[in-house]
Amino acid sequence: MREIAPKELAQRLAAGEDLALLDVREPWERALCVLPGSLHIPMQEIPNAMTTLDPEKELVIYCHSGVRSLHAGRFLEQNGFRRVVNLAGGIDRWAREVEPSMPRY
Image 1 (cartoon, one colour):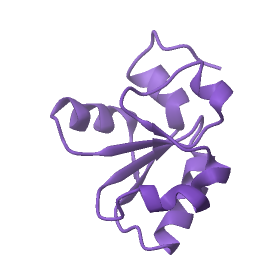
Image 2 (cartoon, one colour; image 1 turned 180 degrees about the vertical axis):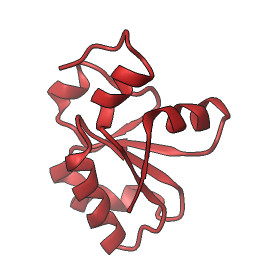
Image 3 (cartoon, helix red, strand yellow; image 1 turned 45 degrees about the horizontal axis):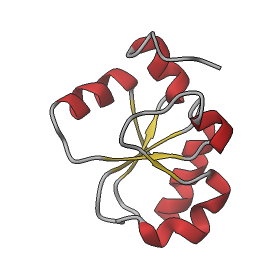
Image 4 (spheres, helix red, strand yellow; image 1 turned 135 degrees about the vertical axis):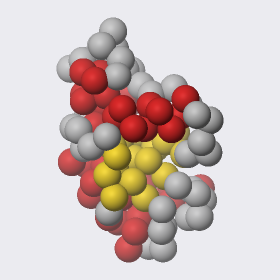
């Protein structure tokens, strides 16, 4: 699975690229900080909710540090999703490199 650095993702979003963002964190984590416009499906709910996702659209998955999103992305790839990308370092790295005012946990 491909990975994308936070700064590259920020550039692509700023350029208006058509990307879907998927947050696989728990609700309490999302309440602390979130990437605007992202869809929220906690990791354990992915198997039941993947029919709501477009398997042809580029899907950037993120969690806190990039580990859970990597596992969720691999699961989606095994189930026919071809354009899955993991946010390297997760939202924590995003906060450090792109949006320093974002709360960290």
